[in-house]
Image 1 (cartoon, rainbow, N blue to C red):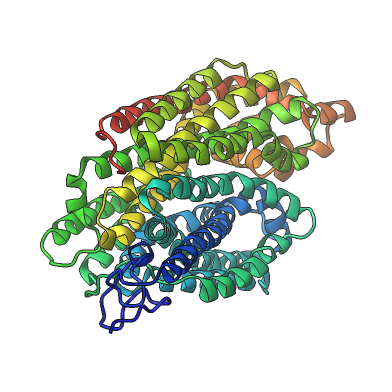
Image 2 (image 1 turned 60 degrees about the vertical axis):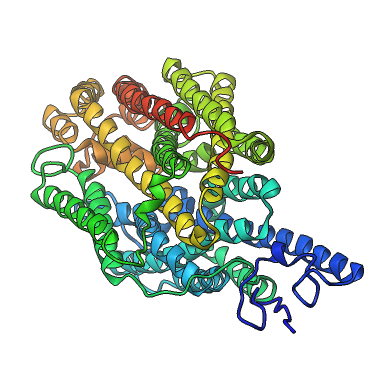
Length: 593
């Protein structure tokens, strides 16, 4: 007689069965159970899927919030450890605090998803919660100052990203196992939209907590991590099929090294080099890009030669899987560029022009971007639910067309816009991204065999996380190139008009635009920051100092150059959204069924 094991999802004879398949089989596993047993099994299965949805949604929410929570709180964090991130030689700390988490998430999710297929998705997910909680505690206890303190934070942010990657790599696979096909789009929609909303909620949470204490930015994750760890260990169980096998060491090493070198090089490409405004001519950057690309080519060759690869390239023969991931990658790049450019637009120009102090702009930028998050939360679950009935292609494609229209609308706005119009365009973008993300995730996960859902989830997360990391390098590079052509002259003439000596004005105007860009990004008064080393503000008349450090001087100075760069960034994002819409349209009919 065969008895079901509710914890492992296996029968005593070793056969693996999903929770859904077990319904109605009774104690014998052959469909001979009593009606009461069948009702109890069905009730237990229905209850478990909602527990799985609740727990995994909490997991991806805290993982994605922590991916962006430091962006707004960076000024408080660097003040807390006594480090000026914009001083010469320190900008690397700034970039790695922002991008380190994203790079690790992009590189590791495939490997961790494959390990979930081999050893159990719930086991890897539970371990991820525990690692995440421990890393969050270590971050909040940083004992050092200056560069050492920054390295401590960067190092444990990497560890935290490992835990977050375990959560995100396996959550979609756990839900796909737990929910029947008719409800899968809804469940993955809630989970996916929560993850995307977490990226924007992190901006607000970081701004609020940073006003209390910079360590609170990391403290907040500790109790959530502990509760989530205990809850997941006690409530989640393996309901999907596992596929034992050997670890693909060659694939893991070549992919990790190749993707890491590629994304790290893009990070350093933002920094100035040899008199250039960006570092794309830096031999180390060029060498890293070449090495990373070569290693990824080797990785692709390796994966076609071994029996149990970590990255199943054969999945790309499935049109729904390939088209869905291409659309996700392009959309992620466009979305990341939107996020970073909106932050700079609000913090550096619009909010100061409307009377907000530069020090208060990070928090208010997050608040004024809430319509974008609201659009996600409205459209995601609804479109996920409807896609279960009508298929993913209609909603995903229409959503991306709306995203492209929102980019065109933002391009038509003046730099000093009317907020209701701006909010409406953000809401439209959020709705479009919600319409795309939930059905697209459901279609990707529903297009693969059950035993491959872990690696498929990891591959999907890799494309999404890589797109976010690529977006920062691409959007900042495009913006910096745009500013480099017109900002120096505007800055030099504007400073001299307020009595700044020509030599000092020329020196400030000759600084790399990335310093000016990140000064607004960090909520600092850019002019005060740029003129502080020269001490010239102490020698100027009070009226001139008030004008230079006021709310309107810098925004009016850079609004023209900034808008030129914004047109380039949003123009590229519009094209990417339309190409992604085309890929979504070509995915085929009802791929998730």
